[in-house]
Length: 266
Ligand SMILES: NC(=O)c1ccc[n+]([C@@H]2O[C@H](COP(=O)([O-])OP(=O)(O)OC[C@H]3O[C@@H](n4cnc5c(N)ncnc54)[C@H](O)[C@@H]3O)[C@@H](O)[C@H]2O)c1
Ligand SMILES: [Zn+2]
Image 1 (cartoon, rainbow, N blue to C red):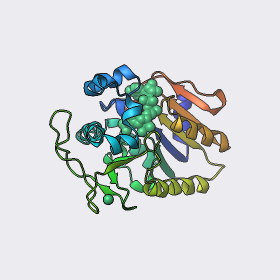
Image 2 (cartoon, rainbow, N blue to C red):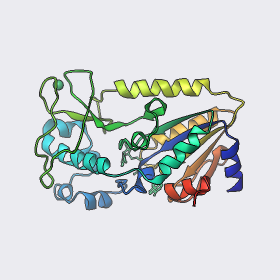
Image 3 (tube, protein in one colour):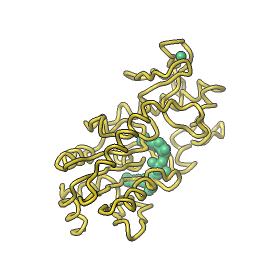
Image 4 (tube, rainbow, N blue to C red):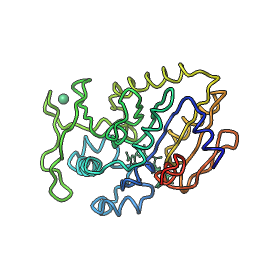
């Protein structure tokens, strides 16, 4: 731990990467296994629909009320939940470095909510607060709560341009329809940040709660850690903490506990 803390102290640049486990400590579910998912959504258990099935664009086409029941419930939950203290501790730490960036597959908008600048954020799977429609490339932002009656949305969110039922700007499974304009802009900023990194200065990658099922975040962090001559990756995860030895170190603990230990916060 002391060696890891020395790395935190001496790094010039910081990349924070996060998967669903980062938000687990704010009380948001990770949807890891089918049973856990169905405990959250008994209505979907009755229909024998799992996470991979409900999170496809075709559910919005063929069963929009059901698709929106799931997404509106998630949207409302994410909107009324506050990011845990670890976010602001990380932000304060990040600001003390020469440069920083955040890469997350979370769609809950919690880095933005915690005050991270949008210019330093790459939400590679989108953001639940933004909506899209096929009639335009423009995205628009949802505001306030989506009214629900049990597991039913009172009025399905519509496109302000053409009136069709909209869908969230989230990358789903088998998604041929994802509007990647916002994602591409963020990706370009992320690539420019990486390109500008001084290879002689220490880059620290702090990863929290990224799972193995869709390993985008883990892979991107590992790839950068091996490509950069002066980088270390610290993987914090209570279960899936394993890491290739040459790339860095792992902390087998929850995100909030990990952040507090790393930053010496009581
Ligand atoms: N909050 C969100 O935005 C959210 C939530 C669930 C799923 N998703 C979406 O589903 C996909 C899920 O992939 P994923 O890898 O992020 O999640 P995942 O559900 O596959 O894995 C979650 C990981 O978090 C770890 N974890 C559990 N509790 C933790 C804690 N308290 N602290 C730290 N880690 C903890 C688990 O061990 C696991 O490795 C992503 O594409 C994402 O877009 C997003
Ligand atoms: Zn439209």
